[in-house]
Each structure stands twice: as C-alpha cells, then as structure tokens.
Image (cartoon, rainbow, N blue to C red; front, side):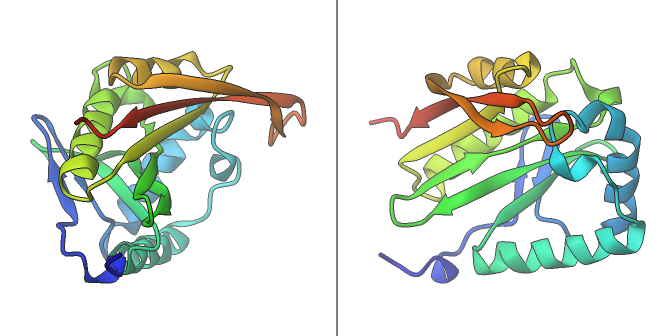
Length: 189
C-alpha cells in the first residue's frame, strides 16, 4: 500500500451549489460564528457543540485540521455556498482506514440552511470523491437512532442500513443509553 501522505488529491470538492474544502488559515472566525449560531440545533447530536470555544480556538482548529488533511490523518472539511463563499456547515472523512481504504462521513449544517438538500449534496460529492479519487472500497455514515434527519440524509444518498448498535453509548448530555445506526456504501463494480 502507498503511504497516504504520498497520494496527491485536491483539498476542494465542488458540487452544483457548494464548495467543500479543507479548513484554511483565516477560517476560524467564520467557523466559530457558524458553530455558535448552530449550537442549539447541534448540541443534542454533537459533543463538541455543548461548550463552544472562542474564535481564537477555532483559528487554531482550522490550521490544525488543514495540517491533518495534508498528512492524511483526518480529513475535516467545511461546507461553503458556491455563490457567496459563506461557511454553512462542516463535513469530511473520519476514521480513515487507508489499508482498505474506507472512510466515515460526518456532517452538520447551520439551521438556516436545513431543508435545502445541502447535506445530501455534500454527502453525494464526498462519496463520489472517495470512490473516484481516494479509491475507497467502503464508506460509512453513523448516526444516533433518535436523529431521523441524519439517517434521512444517508438514505437519500443511497446508503444501505447495515445494522443498529443497540445501547452502544451514553448520551453526552442526558447520560441515557443511545443506539447508533450504521449505513454504508460499497465501491461500485
């Protein structure tokens, strides 16, 4: 297997309405604003949305995630409207397994931009990129069984429900047992 750091691929993916790209220096304030405005919408699903750090922390976050993208350790990306460049969410590839290769796609969207198909468009763009450019064999989406909006994205993007991990974690706020749906897509033949 080729060392992933030697694999050349772009840090930007364009879809019909979106630019999905690696964070860059200078993105911290805009990401901080999008996360802060989305906190109430996200905190039930995302541990990191419960306590939001300041803009300086997000600038460090942007720079570290750009470095991680370059070294292929983690591939966090931000979702921007193509027309304006405004940051409206986040996505990317997590739990990278370059030996297969397989990746997990995660996502979040600013509440002002829900219901427009942006997350499904993001997932479709990342899925195509993973299969065509990263030579992925498998891609996963994992979501809380109590988050029907997230599972609807996986279904709209053509992912198949592999199964449900019952009572596999504790909710980060309520401490109640939660279950996780695992969706996947396998490389087309």
